[in-house]
Image (cartoon, rainbow, N blue to C red; front, side, top):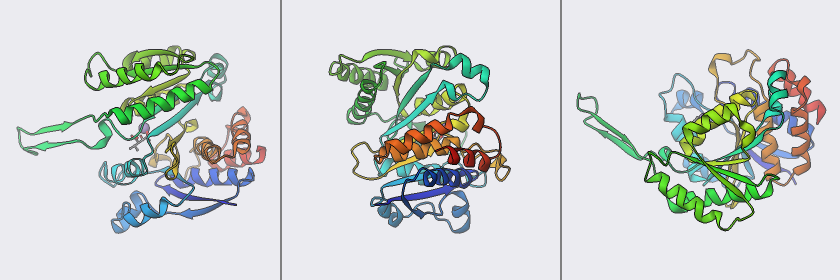
Length: 336
Ligand code: IPM
Ligand code: MN
């Protein structure tokens, strides 16, 4: 039976890269029925719709959601990001944002040769932290204005994310998990994260653990990415670190992600790490590989491991990484 996938191409290069992802799924022989949703900045500018309750309810009945990118310069910051993307993550309880990186995917052969061995995954907590929207203004627009933006960290939310990361680390050959935080300054949130991490670690004696402050992790990501296996971190650190990880592993055009509801109480959502890149819309410069690899994560989560493996293998062939958006998509589709 075909999987029912909700597709949100979104803004900018989103629709371009999503089209290539769907092309490759088709070539891989995965049967899907697509339900297309016209959402994002362009839709908002047309009729003010960000995301209706009805659509959100409809999504709960789908097998998965596949998203390109959202955000356009004409819409004030936050409207689409909070109203669509974060609302999806929060309301569908997509509490794990899984982002894998591979050194051998690097576009420059020099970097690829040097970093061939590294492959790590960042598990980013996806429903809490500074992303919850806690905070507000006092005396806004006055010389004495105050803005606060708090970080929300629940034992429940941190523990389920950390547990997922330990399970993932246990399933990988290196069996190593690094907690990244800033416990020396964020002494409340950091304390909760560190204690939770250490307590859960006792249940996983077969997984070796480490701790890095987030600033130091930025150095190691660049200088010694081979030292990592699985990393678990909070929402904002995870956001920033995964752009850096994308840059050191071949470029953000290759970085895939899965927003998972591991309990499967609803659909999970799959999207490239990159944004809508309005500056290159329609130029054919957008690399669809991140979106294609995100589609591979999607079908793997749905149980199509062999299709996922074939798609990943096709994406890793260096020769395919030349040409326009559709040329790269075609080359990958041909190889699956
Ligand atoms: C990401 C993006 C989003 C985030 C934006 C678009 C809200 O940068 O998925 O990494 O900050 O989570
Ligand atoms: Mn980001």
